[in-house]
Picture (cartoon, rainbow, N blue to C red):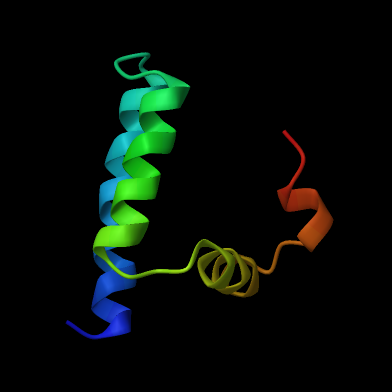
Length: 67
C-alpha cells in the first residue's frame, strides 16, 4: 500500500472514530488509543500527518493546537 492510500484509509477510520467520540459512544482515551493503533498500522508519523493536514487545510499552525 502506498503512502497516499495509507493516509486515505487512516483518515477514513479516524472520521468514523470522531463520529463515535462525538456521540459519546467511545471515550477520549479510547479515541486516542484508536489513533495510536491506526498511526502504527498505516505507518504514519503523527508529526508528518499533522504537518500534511495543516498544509492541506491551510490552517495557521497555532490555531490548530487550540481546543
